[in-house]
Structure formats: C-alpha cells, structure tokens
Amino acid sequence: MEIKPIKTEEDHATALAEVERLWEAEPGSEESDRLEVLTTLIEAYEEKNHPILPPDPVETILFRMGQSSQAR
Image (tube, rainbow, N blue to C red; front, side):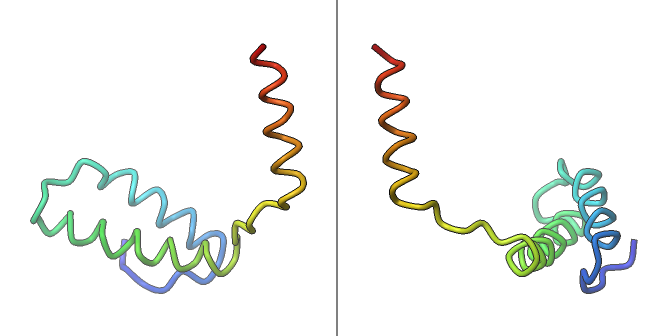
C-alpha cells in the first residue's frame, strides 16, 4: 500500500487494514515507521470526519447515578 492522505471511507478502511497487518512490527524497523505514519493519518482523518464530542454534563451525571444505584 502506498502511503497517501486519507480522504474517503475506502481510504480509511484500507489504512486500517494496513495498520492491522503492521501491528506487531519490530520497533525501529521500516514497518514500524510506516505504522506510525499511518496511525497519524488515521487519527487526523477520524478527528475531522468522526469527532467524539464531549458528553452532555447532565446526561453524564444521570448515567453515573444509574450506575451507583445498580451497584447496591
């Protein structure tokens, strides 16, 4: 796989598959460097296209209260 900007969901899926293939790369190897570059590109793409918004404070409190009452 040629390393290039991730612009589409298909590019994203391809990059994720390549990361999975490279996951156990030996530190300091060319494959490890490739893995690092791909994860940086994936992170940038995901932040732009699939942002994780902070939770609503009220919903967070209600969720936590529900967990506390179930633990008893």
